[in-house]
Image 1: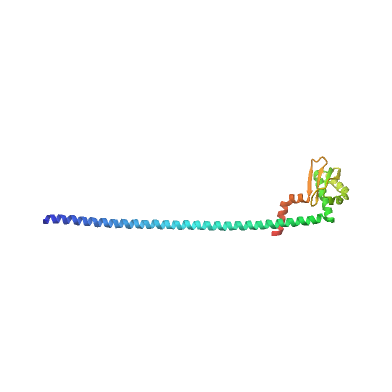
Image 2: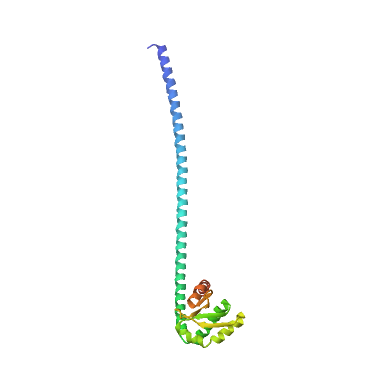
Length: 207
């Protein structure tokens, strides 16, 4: 190979080496840049995953606490309800005992119950029904009951004892034509007043 040709070949090789070196450097820089960018993205994703995990963990914790509070409240309410219902049962048993006795307290209460129902109807000719054991209790005071209803309503009032009823105590009154009826038995009164009584019982039991 001539000196001239060697020179040209040497120049081409040298230029190729320079270019190759430049390309290599650029590739290394680009590779480093890509790697750094990848690491940044990976770090962001990692933080995002951790943050999402933290949020989910916090949300789950709050959910568990909320459910626990709700369950605790429900159990407390159920326990209170059970106690209130038990109190009502005991009250009914006590009322049964009083209503089955010959006590003055019950006789007076029975008279008041009849007067209340007769006054609500407006007096007049009425039929009063009680349990068999209470018939004798009201017979002795029918006249005074009629007079008190007359005073309250301004209407002449006559009470006729009707058929016996199955009840703890109290009375059912109705007009002779049956158009108006007031159920003032102990059971009916308890049912009517149970909501307000429940609040009162709860206040006393859990104050």
